[in-house]
Length: 134
Image (cartoon, rainbow, N blue to C red):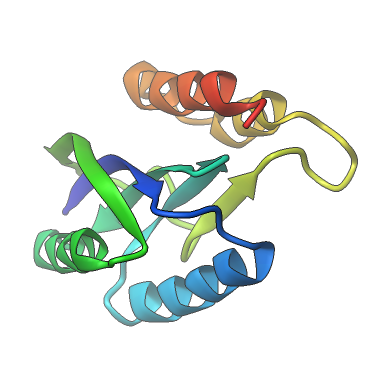
């Protein structure tokens, strides 16, 4: 198994309906190939972790790279893993504040609090801090 972490930029601002459709499709496709992960959106920027069987993660990532809705896809990390950090999530997702008004950095810190890998946790919390105002 492996974990792959990347960032990208949407070519144009996406509506919530467009993001919801991306999530529906991703969750269905990822579940079919046993890929789990977390997607965080800050403005037009995306950060996503994908975990699962190496070949499946690579196929999902290549599909993402070929998606014309975004550009500047940059892989931040790729590593073999023994266990998943997002095993219960077909694709966890957070953008902006949650319905209670909690800011993105606080939501992401809560979501990643149980991740024992400090580097992985730092990637997400730093991204949320940087893009909270987006």
